[in-house]
Image 1 (cartoon, rainbow over the protein chains, first blue to last red):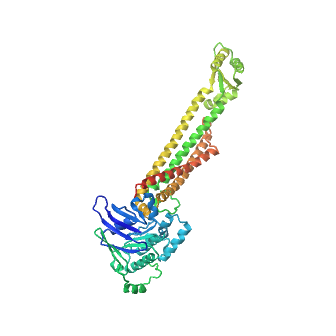
Image 2: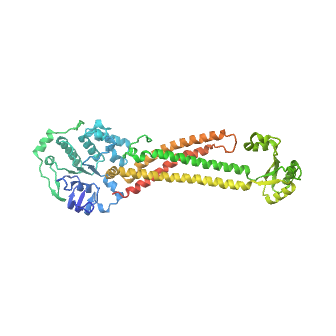
Image 3: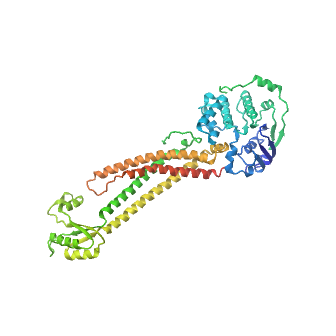
Amino acid sequence: MIRFENVGLRYGTEAEVLRDISFTLQPGSFHFLTGASGAGKSSLLKLMYLAHRPSRGLVTLFGRDMALVTRRELPELRRQIGVVFQDFALLDHLSALDNVALPLRMAGTPETDVVAHCSEILRWVGLGNHLHATPSTLSGGQKQRVAIARSVINRPRLLLADEPTGNVDDGIGMRLLYLFEELYKLGTTVVIATHNEALIRRFDHPRLHLDNGRLMVLPARGRVHEARAKDARANDPGPIDSRGE
Amino acid sequence: MALRPMRPRSDLPLAVDPSSRFLGWITALMAFLAALALAGAMLVSDMAQRWDSGLAGGLTVQVAPMPGAPVAPLDERAEAALTVLRSFPGIRSATLLGGGEIARLLEPWLGAGATDPLLPMPRLIDVVAGGPVDVAALRLRLTSAAPGATLDDHAVWLADLRSFAGAIRLAALGVVVLIGAAAVMTVVFAVRTGLAIHRPVVELLHLMGATDRYVSRQFERHVVGRSLRGGGIGLLLAGGTMYGLHRASQGLRASLLPDLALQPWQWAVLLLVPGALALLALVTARWTVLRTLESMP
């Protein structure tokens, strides 16, 4: 799915923000991306969602060497990647439904299908009563769910989330992570950048840990916490309600 | 105040851009000027055609009164001129105009005084050529047979009028071309500004998999909508102006001006102006967006 080999990234003439990054993500895997603020998590994600090209090294995505991919081929690859941006990146003048519909409309999906699918997924994330609300009228958690709905509406092969729980309380953060895990179980490769250790500890997934621009791959703990099972039973989200957070 | 089109869903909030808010009004002004220039060109063409059909192959002979000169009376000289004309090769007909007709021709300049019987009026002979006429030889024969007779060959000043009408048509078309160029520059400016203002949104759309054509379609829809509305308003204003000029020209007592009325097919040509502006805007917007986006990652 994703392979990085000795990848380095620098902005302009500055020092490298990522150095000698090498790792491979198998299809259908789930990884946390951790590291202190400024460690390079967002930069690494930007390389993964093709916002930047590496300054050096080899990046392979979906079996394609990114150095050989032309600009014209990028949209097709990008449509296979869902991204949850740290600041949500919702378009303020569009309704929740139109925001979620963007990837489908770009892919040329018929309008009747667009409306049906987007309404369904917004109901699924608990925003069935906010289909036509603009982002400015939604709470932080609701915006987050719109952003997540948009990132998964076209069933991406790769889902990348940059601090998806950074703007919500722990309860909502937990629910969102359960949502990502559901997608992972459906076969989506998931990478979540976070520094919320409390949440990470509840899920048994390997970590990509960045420290000062260098990457370490930390394996999963190999066991499921009892606490997680307890939490899962206690906090079974069911359908997420639409109350503001 | 900006023209507020119906708002189809657009991923880019272009309708609220300061640069594009006045695009509709600028297009309205351009459509107004282009429609007037085109209408002017078509009216001049009509006029030239009328002159052509009315005057081509025509000659006028004027026999002037010569009070005190030792020549035959005016009517005799006019008859002599008629005789020369009717026997001259290439002349189909020669008709002496009556006093009433001459007075009517002079009325715009002389008013009611043109009918004064004391006014020494020339005799006019309307001549229609049926083929090539040796004008120089005819002029010689006329002056010897009817002293005071002058021959006016319409072809000479018809050629001048034709070239004048051609120059006006060319100038009008030049104005239309300049308006088109100004429209292109306006759209380029509006689109580039829109791209600069909304660059973060465009980048976001790209990251979500939007192609350059997807982005350019957003701009195309916007500028075409504005151009059609602006063009429609400009055309309405031009139509009103044309109607006003038509009414004003009808009110003139002297028929110095031609009738400023357009034929139905000419109105149909003017109806194409907003569409042509919209098409120009579409092509310009697409070209500008695609060229600009090529420089983005």
